[in-house]
Image (cartoon, rainbow, N blue to C red; front, side, top):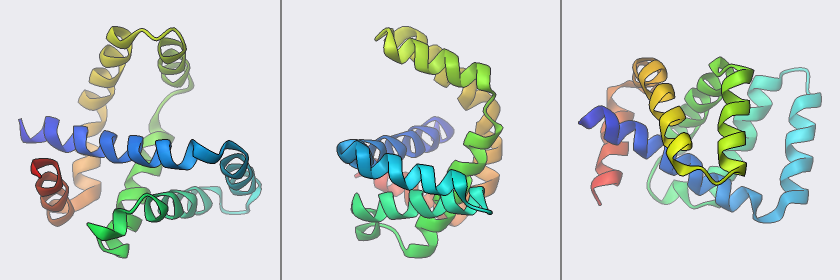
Amino acid sequence: MKSKILFSTLIAFTSLVSATSYANNAEQAKKLEAAYQSTNIKQSLINVCVDDYTKAGALNKLTKADVNKLCSCNVESRGRMTESTKWDLQSATNAKNQAKVKEILARLQKAEEPKIKNCLGADLQKKLLSLQAK
């Protein structure tokens, strides 16, 4: 049960950041374009994520180090996602097929959850779970 809550919390934080960051698509597109042109793409994506979380107010609940760790784990997890899974998820989202989106996310959760938990560490997991409870 706790693992579902943890994964849901990570997805919720990602959604929060996505909603905030995509409020200005042009600005977000520029940030992501710059990240993909960087000589250290992974770190640039983490920096974009941290910036987005900060703008979304995450530092009201988490430390800067927590946000950095959360973003690092997020980028690592997204990096492990196959192109096929990304296409399936985007297709289901475009079709507004929530059942298919949930099915794909359930598969991702099963595959990624142990890796995400290991990446986050016990302390950050506890913080995220406490935020979910509020």
